[in-house]
Image (cartoon, rainbow, N blue to C red; front, side, top):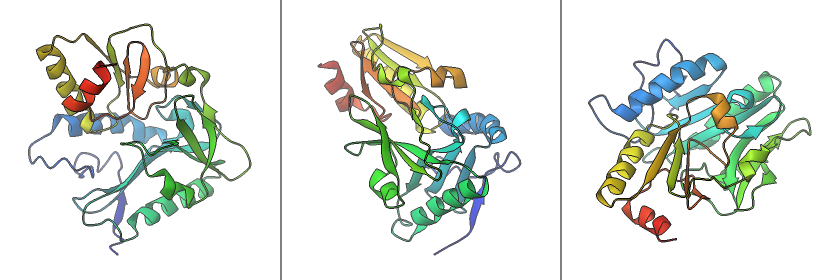
Length: 250
């Protein structure tokens, strides 16, 4: 197994590959938006650790207090994403990345680590069955099947903010909250815009551009959340035509 891992820093951020499966040789708007977002987050203790190759092998986590999610707790890390795909999969990289996060948390005397999951594995969420092998347990739930998984070192647990369990908004049209944490978001926003323009579908696209806005969201959130007819639908940011049609038929 290749053990050449590196962490992104403010010094190397501009030149490093961001480990996503976007393969554009030209500057990509989503990747560059991600760089800008990370430039501020790294100062807050955000960690992006990756295999030093142009592949998709990385973990991304942050102190829960500054993580852009409506989850509350003291002295925890929040894992946004742990992703290994393609040729590197099956070689122990996922375990190595999770073990690094665990060691980092213990070295910094954290109370534990948490992540977003669901009763049934959802697209665009890290593999919760993998996390449970390390001792992660469900510590909070929402009425629509999302779960907060946590590995506690001291018996304390985080929880969803009360507003995250609301799962409703007043706006009845297609409504999407998003931030720039993932390189795919720009592409997904453009896809939604195009579909809605062609099909005359009203849509509200709301950028979550501050920590406060993220903490106050009316639903679970990892970087994206869609509502329709006032009801929360999904955190799946890859809203292709078929997915959109299914939501809009409701």
